Structures are given as C-alpha cells and as structure tokens.
Image 1: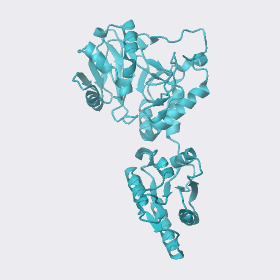
Image 2: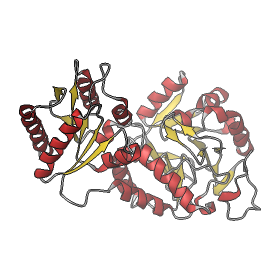
Image 3: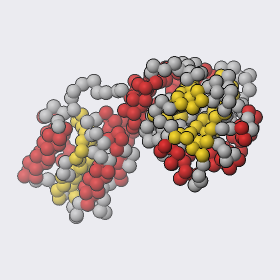
Image 4: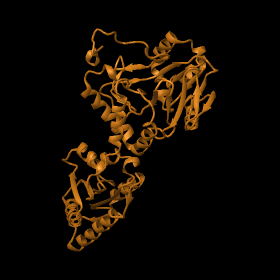
Length: 413
C-alpha cells in the first residue's frame, strides 16, 4: 500500500481518519480511494479521489448530505455509526442522483425506512430508477428550505452541473454550501481539506482536468449557478469529490467562473481542419479550402492526423468557430484517426459551432456520409458535405472553391 504523506502540512497528523468535524454539528463521513485511476470509464484520476458525504446534526433533526459509492458501503456505515444511530437519521439530501453519490442510499433506506429523501423532483425520480424502490420523499425547488432546528438549509437550483437534476444545499445558519460535483476535483486526500494541501500545483492539475472534462461543457450553467451564490455568505464549500474548500473557497469559486467566461479576444474567425489522406488527393482539397478561407480573412489551422498530436487538435477545437473534417473512404468508412476525434466530442461544447466534411474516394464514398451523420448527432450547424472521386480536376477544384465559400457564408451567419 503506498504512503500518501505528500498532502499533509504536518506529517505527524493521523491519516485515514474515519470522520471529521468541520463545524459544530457538521461532519465529513466520506470515503477515500487512492487507488482509483479511471472514473466513469472515460476519465482519468491519476491522484485518486474522495467520495464526500456529510452529516448535519440539528437540534431537532439529523440529515445526511449525499452518500458514497456502493463499493464503500461497509466502511461508510462504520463511520456513520460513530456519530449517529441510523435510526435517528431523518433526511438524506441528494444534490444529484449520480450513483457515485447515491450508491449507498438503498442500504440506508433498508436500515431505516422512515428516512425522507430530499432532492429536486428530477433527482428523486432518477433515484427511484437507481434503487428500484419506493421511499419517503420531499421535492425541493429554488429557495425552498429544510429546518433541522438550529440549522436551516436553503436549496438552490443548479441544473446540468453536471446532471440535469442538480441542486446546491446552502446551510445558511452556518455559511456552508454543499455543491456536489461543482468546485470539486478528483484528488484523493486522507484529510480532504483545502487547508491541508501542500502540493497546490498537483491539486490544481487535478482540479483543471476535472473541471475541463466534467463541468466546462456546461459552462453557461456554471456561470448562472455562481451568479446565484455570489451574494451569499460562504466560508466553506463542501464538495462531492476532492478537498473541502475550508480555507479560501472563493478562490476556487471565482476561478471556476473565470474558466467558464473565457472568450476569444479577437473577432477573426478560426477554423480547424483535421484530415487524413491516403494518396494525397484529400490533401489537395485541404490546401484549396485553406486558400479560400484565408482569402476571406479566416484563420485556418490544418492537422494531418497521421502525424499531428491528438491532444493539440482537441484543444484547438475548444476555441475555434468551425471545423472541417477531411477523409478518404476505405472499406466503406472514414479513417480511424478522424473517428478518434469525433468520439471525443460532445454536443454541449460543439453544438453552437459550424462544421462539414469533405474528401476523396475511389469506390463509393460512404465515409463522408458517416462523418456527416456524426456531425448532426453533435448538433453542429452544417452545410452539405463535399466528395469527389480520386484526384480533383481543375473543374472540380472550382467546385471545391464554391464549397469553401459556402462554409465561409455559414461561418458569418
């Protein structure tokens, strides 16, 4: 088992804490997974992660906020029992229904059928499909409250961060907000506190990757959510993953807004052209299209995907205005290097952009049609694709020019 002293300011502090008091009546009861390296199949987690769950004990009622992944249930129940009898838990608040945060709820409900589950109407509906059981429920919406006695929650709708059913739970009596995936990171810490991070560069590396992959596709929703909480008194952000923001929460909140607001600093349109060529014929098309676009004062970046770096192309696609994919057809399809790009894209980021596909073929040219169908799945605004057989003639290059000009027209709409 690796030793994880790198994250502590004081290495003599006890590691592998079971529970952690954050404020009077507020406790962290989550789980740590240092071994995790892949999350949700498609995400890397090179620093591991935490599954943060919280217990809030009011003078009259007790609530759990989010739970942990189902694989951590035994450890989780041990932690919970250190602080409260499960029979004395009145509420479970779910900030969204994603299984890594709700995976233990079914067991808790089996142990105490009187628990009331609190969440958005959509989250409660999702949870029923996840647990395959009925339960007591309390649906909340914007500004609705839940009174635990001397502690009162106010709920804030925060859809699509990063599930449609998301809420934030603001404990207004204690200036603490529970935000689930927002402002979090896949960064495993035995004492998951911002104030205990020593390698901040490493933490920010994990934060950036998490934000880019999970939250940036929903940046407009992130801005709206932050606008809602900016006037609240907040001195602690209890996240769903990674360190709790106990030292300077607004540093991460404001930085998240800054990342979400990034816009191009000039008015010049930018087009990315990733392409593959077998015999050089598609390259001829690329060069002609590039010439036409540049003559119309459009910045063009071309990438031969046989040689160029995939990560560099993916980065360029985040900020460009339009993309043109070029490919021959081999064995009835476009070539794999282009599909490597296309399967990594999503309509939330790309749907506002313009796109098309072109290429040379020798037999039937289905590859162009298949890519065009994928562009429509991604919600791009498109023009008719362009294809020709083998090497373009002078007359066909005139048609290529017309195709490029029609894309210029689309870009300027």
